[in-house]
Image (cartoon, rainbow, N blue to C red; front, side):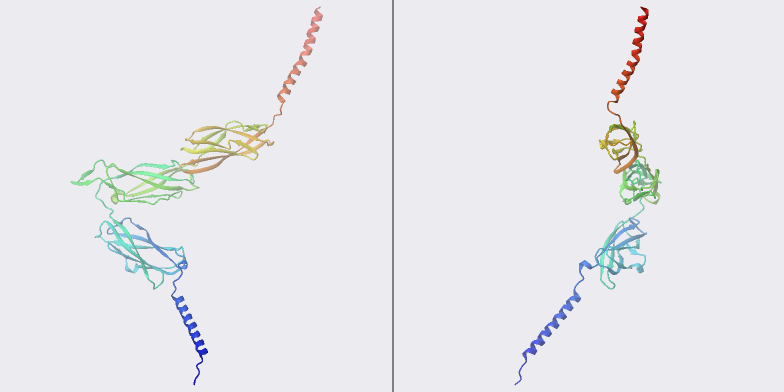
Length: 418
């Protein structure tokens, strides 16, 4: 009779169990998804297209941006454009664009050229943009609407530039502010007849672009729209600007380009912007001196800038000297306005002169400025107590000494007459 060795069977079962467990663990690790903390994540968008709106029967250039907002690197990124009617690609060969590697926070921009069908209607059209993270991987779709319009209108209204203003009125180097202008439809009637045909006198501003120069940067986006401006009506547009720190004083001109009812109604204007670096002067109006360590200093504060300044204040500072008030607040000052201030000073110093720094703070529009306008010297005079009394006594003594011989002489004359 054969005896079954259960110990060997138990060993075989344990080995089989461990083998199956290892296989299961290996299978699980091979299908586990990549952690979201280390995976790439794509964001795709259309950042702009030109012209805006896309013109019927013309080409439009569309810029697509893809950005990796995740934490892992994407090694083989591609994008694909698939437009719908009324849009079509200039060539199907240009549909797919291979971007390549996109590390975290990296982005790429690619420009597609589309044609707008001549039978398109004014409104919107859709384009589908796909992206692929890995070669041979899945394509992910995003859809975007593009405006479709026309650059030609039968309206006969005429747009003119009727008003220009800046805030602040005159800029200083390093300032920021706004340039505002008004565009007015100068028509006086609601319709006009030309060669027997009636036309409305509405006007349109399809776009208005303000362009800066090397010293002035326009930080606002260009205006786009197709709304109707009736006869005598107007629209006011504002653009933010930034002035360079090293700008030269004088009048600078920004270029304003406007697209109106049609290409024959386009306009180009020069927008003046004034820059002046002059500010506030602080001038002593009497000698700056202290007697026996104290005294009152007097200054004339003058606004030399071409426009009003606000929050003007003057501060004096010198080692070892106390000033009261520590900061003299003047407030708003018109151009060429003069204001006189008095500041008490006290010191225990014995030097003959003490240098004083005069600092002025003010605002030009919303811009805060602080300038050390001058360094002056305070003379310290010392006058001993009782000097005036001693002088008076000396005068009296001198007079008495002069008077004694006179009295004696008069007495002698009287004796001689006797």
